Image 1 (tube, rainbow, N blue to C red):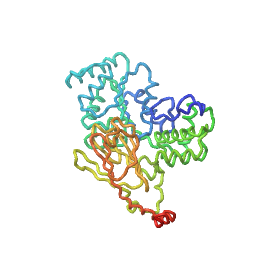
Image 2 (image 1 turned 180 degrees about the horizontal axis):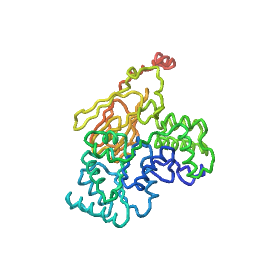
Image 3 (image 1 turned 60 degrees about the vertical axis):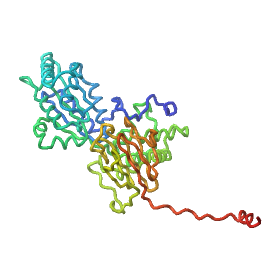
Image 4 (image 1 turned 90 degrees about the horizontal axis):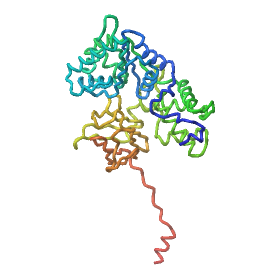
Length: 413
């Protein structure tokens, strides 16, 4: 990789949650303080929401790293569970093997464990990531767990972290009692333009840049335009730009490298790609063409079992496909990853890309990371098929001008 060229000791823009790279913007610091309050207060129950790639998981990992040894933690990341399986998973985190227990026995074991920990002077914390996927029935079990208490305090602290849909669930009439038990809620929005620049410099410094300028000043505003201040997208774009500079053996990124990265990723400006995760103060981008008049480049047919279940027009922009409701196209299937793939549409091209999904995408039985879509292509996604239909007007073929030499040769024969 490019570490030696850029004189870095670590990759600065890896996508995995790494606490040492956490950039504490004002809102990230506040969200972390809310998490820490679950330990300070005797009735700690906090909900943290944020868009995809906002840094929730990194925040959780940082918070866990700093916890005192007397805090016992159950961390749940797999949230598509029924109530009994969820409670069993919590017990597994506490060191039990409850798989043959029925629900009453699971509850009794959990209650006894909580009381024992309290008597031993230890605090117990339950953290659920991706909590927007919890069913109403499981969330009701969470409410019941939050009610386990001693004479003076709750026996279990709780942090629920998830995408904005989690707030929608908590605000539903069926979960009013649970919502009333939540002590604090906080929504983690995107970084501002200035925070985006500070975030990039922070990660480079942690990686060993020692203050050296690797990106030109004019790149920061452009990075913000194409990422919307979403940390995960910033990482992807910066890493790709550095790879472009590495390709020409340069230890600094030029605007040409940045533009090459944009072309390679086939991105368009963030405001044009999605309405998700906009800063509250951001005004909608001006446009001279009403959205309904933007020409349709193509369409996709989503099929299952040989039957078309969804048809969707493709216009310039990005269409994210995955299992959860926050996607532009949701496929509710266990074979589909949370964010499985995306289709990037431009006036002259349409590309489907795998988003590091578990089961991948396939074209003609071959797994691919990226594929330029042609009219009639069928892409296998889990147990579904996506057929692409190109609706761009056919391009006129250039007129063929006969070669005079050949004409003379033919006439001479």
